[in-house]
Each structure stands twice: as structure tokens, then as C-alpha cells.
Amino acid sequence: MKVILIEDVKSLGKKGEVVDVSDGYARNFLLSKKKGLEATAENMNNLKLKKANEDRIAKEKLEEAKRFAEELKTKSVKLGIKAGEGGRAFGSISAKEIATAAKEQLGYELDKKKIVLDAPIKSAGSFTVQIKLHPQVTGEFNVRVEEE
Image (cartoon, rainbow, N blue to C red; front, top):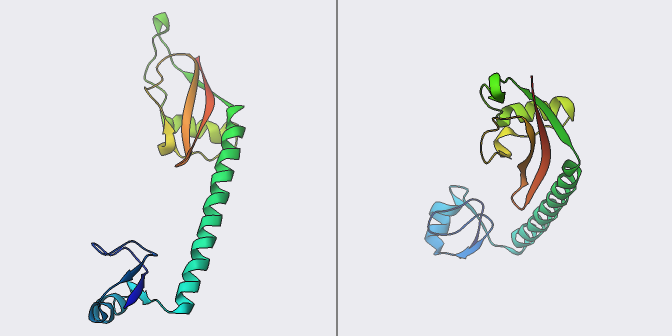
């Protein structure tokens, strides 16, 4: 019996795949536990339409992420850091502080977990910070750190 999987089933397949299983396994496990649908013509057509819609949405999200990455290139965030004698900083600038400053200064909601810092920012200056906007798109923006 051919079955369309509604969710991932270990050692059988991933969500959305059409698999061929025995009638008993399909009836007693996959269909009864709502892990699959019988692969009728109507269900196959619905699956095809759903995949096409998901592909279109994924493409739109990718394009939106690319546009946002281009927009971010021209933006800059300004932060202050306390420094002692000799320009030595107290503490460092974290991704959370950068995300908060971006929200206040630029109006962008950036996820602190997606901001990539190679090393903590511990000195004044201008730094290029990367942010993962999409699995295929990484944006960059400038962070200016000044001594307070």
C-alpha cells in the first residue's frame, strides 16, 4: 500500500514522502496513529499543491532575506564602552547589546542568537558584524564602538 507520510517516521521516511509499506503496517500503525495518509489521487494532488506552495513561500523568504542583507550593508550601529587608563575596556560588547542598539537606533528586530561575533568586542573602533538572516543568506552591518 502506498502511504503519504504526514510526519517523520524513523527508519521509514520524512514528512511528505510517498512510501510503499505492507497493508497491515499502514492500517494498524501509520493510518491509525495519524502518521500517514493513503496515497489516493486526491491526496497526491493535495501533496503536490502543498509542496508547490511551500516552495513559493521559501523562495519569497529567501528573496526578502537578500533584500534585507543589502539594506543592512549601508546601516551602522553606535555603541559606547567604558574604558580605563590606556584605553583598556571594562567588559565587552555582546550580541545582546548589539541587537538592543539596532532596535533602538535602526528599528530592526535582530535576533541576538543569529548575530555572529568572531571574538568579543573589547576595544573602541569600527567593526563589521555578520548576522544569519536565512540559511543561505548572511548579512553584514557596521558597529561603531566609542569610549565613554
